[in-house]
Amino acid sequence: MITPITLATAVSNGMAIFKPLYMLFGKCMEGLLYLFNDKYFLSLIVFTILTRLILFPFTLKQQKATAKTARLQPKIQKIQKKYANMTDPKDRQRQQEEMQALYEREGHNPMNMGCGPMLFQMVFLMGIIGIIYYPIQYILGIDIASQSNEIAEALGINGSYFQIEILQNFEAYRETLATQFGDLFTPEKLDAIAEYRTHMFLGNVDMTKIPSIKDWSDPVICIPIFCLITSMGSSVLSTMIQKKQNPAAAAQGNQMLLMMLMMPFFSFYISFKVSAAVGFYWIISNVIALVQQLVMATFFPPKRNIARQMIESTIERRSRENSIKNTK
Image (tube, rainbow, N blue to C red):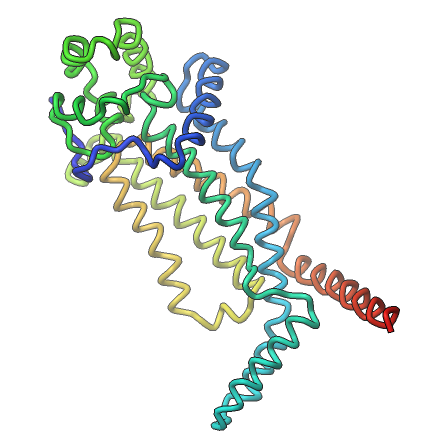
């Protein structure tokens, strides 16, 4: 029985701006599949671990930037408290001037809060999306994007993840692809898709299926559940570390709790809208993120980061002061 994905009405092959990343990561995944004898999920686990390791220095840099901000919080709060009850319009200007003087004295730019590393991580992770959502194009090397609308119309697909749906219902679609798009889907290419499809099972679970909240007897329902559990664990640990690194954040209370719960339940909801293979990637990514957070908390604890920032800032400040003295 064909079960079309109808998450969105537009056929998608990814964002054009990220196509070079999709192609690069697709080749990397293709190499891992060759190395691990086409074991898709083992290759995906290894690929996710490797990308996390590559991104680790950027994550560490972001944490250091946060630590530097946390170190200045007492001084910032002192200035804010000083002008809290003043009504003179000029007081706001004086407050801003004192804040700016503090930043200059400490060599800190409040506009540079580690957003660069975070942005790089987001762009990097977009490449991973390419190999998860668009495997026919970027792993198997079939230029399905060149005729995506025609193919989707011929197969009656109206979902944005139509490449995953082709895998999901490949045997039902194979004849149509061969007869109407034989120049693109040659017998060799069709055999490659069929072979790829056989590795989309985790045990006896078809990971191209979309979990259904109405069918708890299907073992694929475990994917959204583990998505929720692992995402919740990662969020809780991240919140705990953030509170230690930035005590001022603890005062936000309910707001932090809401943010902590929002993403896990959002991922739980979305995991019922996409194939289980996508949910599997989220689970692995959450587990690796959790382990990474534990490693950073053990070897790069917040208090040590703040202390290191104090030492580095003191050295930088004295260096600037000596430079000023020497120029006089």
